[in-house]
Length: 257
Image 1 (cartoon, rainbow, N blue to C red):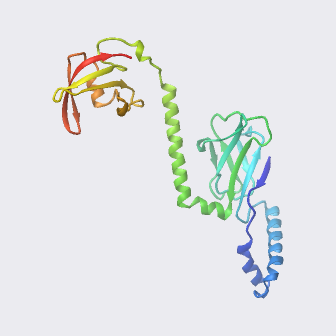
Image 2: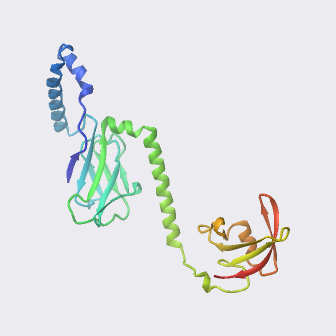
């Protein structure tokens, strides 16, 4: 396990108070460098003794694989948030979905990250799991910013859509329409229709709801016209409610291709 600082702490906010406390003349800025060095040393000492982060900073924690206990205690508390967890698989850095790790509430001392579900296989190289997290003021400012909230909401929406698509794919069945036959309209049929008012002809293929594309002549089997056509044969008439009112069509052709 290796902890790598990604940013350096900013002591400038402490400098005015420290200069005033030490009764240093503010008209002698050459003393600022000495005060800043003393502040940095003091902060480093306190952080080392307390094992807590006092100033804003960002870290990356490198692990050699996901922990067998499925839990890791993060250094540099108090924990505010975890930006992301990534891992190396087949030489490529990938990101673990938020749904697969849970962090302790903000402000926890120490802060832990617990992993859930089936964890991915990682390459057998050092530092193959990375946890990046900010600390203190930087994290708090980020955590409450509108941009951060919007990004998290967008990420949650995308992850929800990914889960939905994965569920659809897992239940999908491939059907070769060319192997279907018959004179009755059913799923997969290409139907030619004639508008009984204008005699205009149109052609639609009846497909699943996720494949529907009206611009390409594919209509969903669950759409009003799709439902009306199921079971019909050549010569039958169907009536469909459209935004412009009721429309009547005659079925003039049924084929599978």
